Image 1 (cartoon, rainbow, N blue to C red):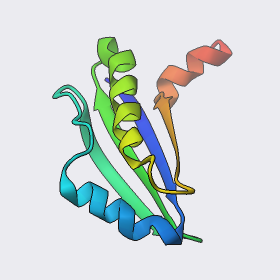
Image 2: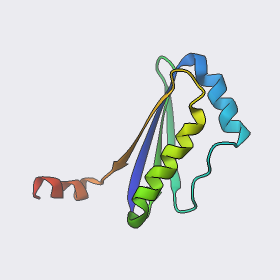
Image 3: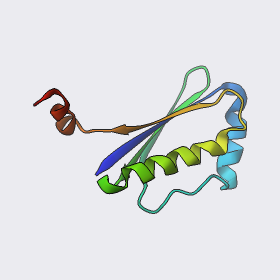
Image 4: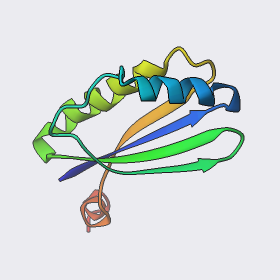
Length: 99
């Protein structure tokens, strides 16, 4: 299984608009193979959220595209930023340092 982390920062002035966009259900849909497992939110000069997605290893690239596409639904909010990153479990990352 592969993992994708989506981080979104929304300024306080855009939080209501973000909620409206989300509630309308008009964001690009995620494919069935992209499963959101957790979403965490905290307040710090606005709203920060982290969403963790699971995707099959062979669908990582397609999953990354889908999660990024979903974020574009918020482009009308001034000051919003997002990052979408693939994640590795520690056991898999050890191979990067020859272990």
